[in-house]
Image 1 (cartoon, rainbow over the protein chains, first blue to last red):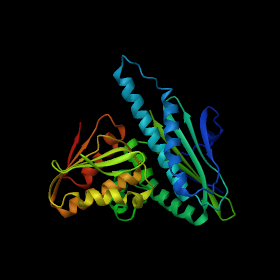
Image 2: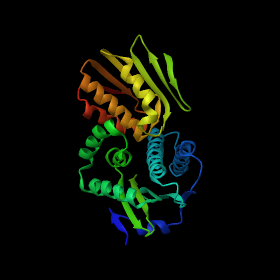
Image 3: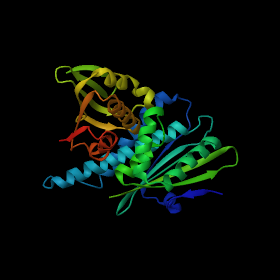
Image 4: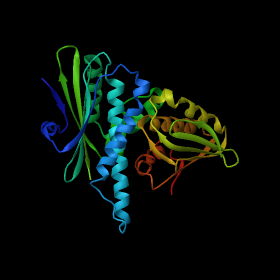
Length: 188
Length: 114
């Protein structure tokens, strides 16, 4: 039985007019794969700018394009960094990130597998995030992360600084692993 | 300006006369551990007096980098000997969204987004 937090869209995985990147489980050390997060995030962000063309006579169109590009690059990079940090290398299951353009929003859906223990810890964090005032929790985590690092700051910046809406699905795969799907809706 | 740290897509520069540290490029390092050399430099740059952190040329910063800047800001706030000014750019979209949080951590910080 999957646990869902937030306005999770089951249908989004069936949408075809988007862009999906799939990363197979790999034996290459994390340190060497890390740069792929930024490269992939920049690629997704550049892809999106095609749909927000800049008009040389309209300076607002250029700043809007730059703002959307920056937001997509930031969000995609954080989702991929989290997936890479918390996926377990022994689990041969791919990580995917999908980007869909709706009329009024950019939608992201990132999915990866992790061990049941890590999944449960993350589920605890997500429940706290969903029940908290994001700006208050953000400042608390900034103080806390200054001591220890980590702490879900990427997700909190998406909510607090970018006004994004997040949703999750946690699926217990009954083999000691869990598939976690994180969806981000960025209104434009 | 002298370059004190240089990475694949970023650099940290230092001007001792104006006591300005400038972060430039794209910073997407993995966790606070990889940010430690930059954090150590910033932390030791000015024991007391004025200091400027120039971020105008920093096109991209991931959340671990935001954690590093927060840690630095909290350290300066607690030390109470450094008058910190942070300069950002309106043209870099993440700065307009995320830098304001540093002021919440340290209300006496001077933030100029130009």
